[in-house]
Image 1 (cartoon, helix red, strand yellow):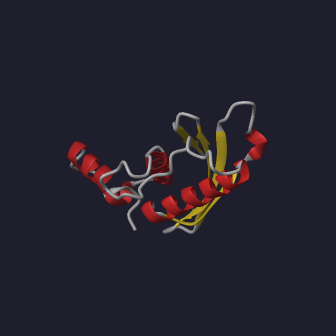
Image 2: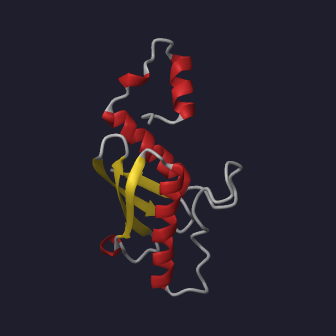
Length: 138
C-alpha cells in the first residue's frame, strides 16, 4: 500500500528526481489522506468523471427527511465514500458531533479510522458548511 496517491507520487518524482517513495513521513501521509478526504467530501455525487458515486450527496437536499434521518444518511454516505475511495484507511466510522452544533446549519462529523498499512488509529474532524464547502483537520 502506497503512502501517497498516484498523482502525488508522479508530481513529487517530477519535481525532485531524487525523491524516494520510502522517504514519506507519517505527517506527510496524514496530510495526503486529509487532502484526499477533503476532495471526496467536497465533491457532489454525480459530478466526477472518475465514478458516478464519487463524493457525497447534495447537502442541501433533505427536504423529504427528518433531521435525524438526514444525519444518519450523511454518516453512512461519508463512511461508504471514504471506505470506497480512500484505500489507505480501514475501520472507518463517521459520527455526527452534535456538541459542536451552534445556531448555524454547519454540520460537524468525526471520522475515526486506521491507516491500513500501519494499524494506527487516526481521528479527523470535518465541518460541512451549508454551501457544501468542507474543512477537515486532525
